[in-house]
Image: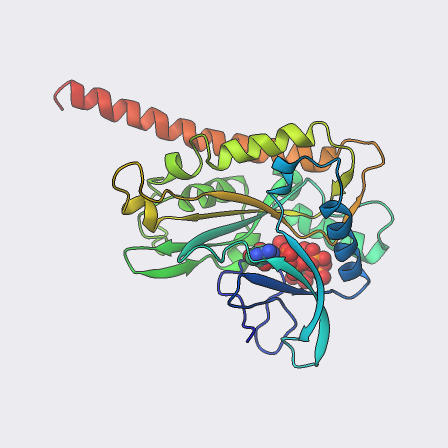
Amino acid sequence: MLKVPEHQVAGHIASDGKLGPLVDDQGRFFKPLQGDSRGEHEAKFYESFTSNKKVPDHIHRYFPVYHGTQLVEASDGSGKLPHLVLDDVVSGYSNPSVMDVKIGSRTWYPDVSEEYFKKCIKKDRQTTTVSLGFRVSGFKIFDHQESSFWRAEKKLVLGYNADGARLALRKFVSSNSPADSNLTPNCAFASEVYGGSNGILAQLLELKDWFEIQTLYHFNSCSILMIYENESILMKEGDDAPAARAQVKLVDFAHVLDGNGVIDHNFLGGLCSFIKFIKDILQSVDKRDETDTSLLENGH
Ligand SMILES: O=P(O)(O)O[C@@H]1[C@@H](OP(=O)(O)O)[C@H](OP(=O)(O)O)[C@H](O)[C@H](OP(=O)(O)O)[C@H]1OP(=O)(O)O
Ligand SMILES: Nc1ncnc2c1ncn2[C@@H]1O[C@H](COP(=O)(O)OP(=O)(O)O)[C@@H](O)[C@H]1O
C-alpha cells in the first residue's frame, strides 16, 4: 500500500487529492512523471547517470538509487500513472530532520519558454537564489523536547533574506525549541552534523571536488537534501552508539542538461557559497566552545 511521504519538505505534495510522490514500506519513493515532458526528462537523466561509467562510485552515493519507472495508482485519484521508482533516502531513519536547499544563482536555463523564464527569475530575485546562489526550499526538525516534528512554514521560508537563510541553517542543528522564534538557536548539534570526517561539510566538499572537474551534466534547479537524526546524538554513549548519520543527497533532475564539456558554474558557485555558510556556523561554534573552555579553566 502506497502512502504520502511523512518527511517530504518541498516540491509538489500529494495532499488534498493533488499529484505528488508516494512511498511504500520497503524503502521506495515513487515520484510521478511530471507533465511538459519533465518527467521523461528526469527518467532519462537517471538512466544516463546510473550507467555513466565516467561518474565515480563515491559520487553515485550522493544520488538516490534509481529502479526504473513503474505504473502505480496516482495520489490524485486519476488512475495508474508512470512513476520514477527511487530509494527513499529517509527510510532508514526513525525521526529524521530534513532540509531541501535549491542550489544555483538561477533556476532558469537556455531555451526555456519566456513564461517559464519570467516565473523563475521572479522567484530567484524574491528569494536568496540570486544573492546567495542557493535558497532554502523547506525543512523540518525533530523536536525531541516535544517529541514531534516542527515544520518551517513554506511562505516564510521563501521570504528569507541572507540572515534568514543563515538562521535556518543554525536552527536546523539546534536542540532548543524550533517553534519559539525568540530563542537564539544554540547549534547544539552543529559539530556532529555539519562537522567531522563524515559530516555534511565533508560530504559537500567531496561533491565540490567533483563539480570542479565534471562537465557531463548541468544540474539546473536541483536540490541538496540534508538529513540527520538528532535523537541518536542525544542518546549517544560510547563509540559504538549510533551517530547523527548526517547525509547529503541530490534530488530533482527534471531540468538537468548535457554539460557539453563545460563546467556547471551555476551549481558550483552556489555550492561554494552554501559551503561558506556551513563553515561559518562551524567556526562560530568552535569559537564559543574555546571561550567556554577557557572560562572554565580560569575558574569561572
Ligand atoms: O509550482 P510552484 O510555483 O510551487 O513551483 C515549484 C517549486 O516550488 P517553490 O514554490 O519554489 O517551493 C519547486 O521548488 P521546490 O522543489 O519546492 O524547491 C520546483 O521548482 C518546481 O519545479 P520542478 O518540479 O523542479 O520542475 C516548481 O514547480 P513548477 O511551477 O516549475 O511546476
Ligand atoms: N528519493 C527521495 N527519497 C526521499 N525523499 C525524497 C526523494 N526525492 C525527493 N524527496 C522529497 O521530496 C521533495 C521534493 O522532491 P523533488 O524531486 O524536488 O520534487 P519536485 O520536482 O516536485 O520539486 C524533496 O524536498 C524531498 O523532501
